[in-house]
Image 1 (tube, rainbow, N blue to C red):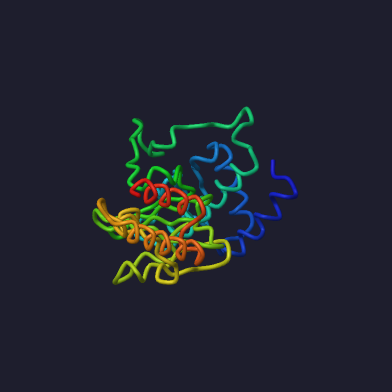
Image 2 (image 1 turned 135 degrees about the vertical axis):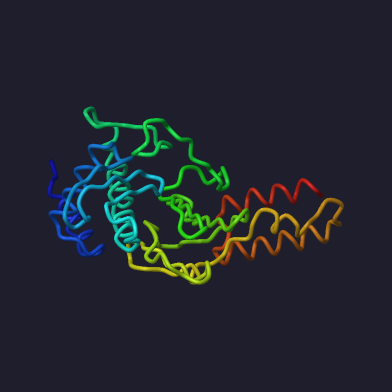
Length: 242
């Protein structure tokens, strides 16, 4: 059953993602039945039957229609986030599954957690054209993997729900969807990696070098590139070398 609060949000989602309200309501019900982790849907606006799994796994009857797949995936991620925020996942009668399993597999498949462990569990993950992404709502971070390299970005007020386009010449051209519209990866500020930050004061550095590094870290924190927690952690590493 859809209450008035949820129905109001679903109306907003319908307008944002370009689907009719009945289609969004149908998808909400299937996401709820899947415990917020998966959905088995069947609606004309979604090209008939299909399956979605939180973690970026989606199947529809038009596998080559990447635009539709991305729109459905983004909408499912938003509905899953709403479902978990409302605490519906704790209510009895809702199915809970292994979040690492593929919805269409009979055997659970472990997902590769390639992002930094301290970021926790992502709110949305996926892979497009050799580029993998994972979005972390609480940390306001977007992790991007190209080959073996992982880069973090500050998302600010954007809550990433999926990829807006599937074809691009360069990774910096990729465009993501968020609750306030589309945002290009090139528009997001890159977060210095731990290696880059800590290399400012390698082992054996003088006290003045370490103090200079602390000053630079402080500037990054003031600019909003580093969170207070990240700044404190890196500060401890540097102070330990004095």
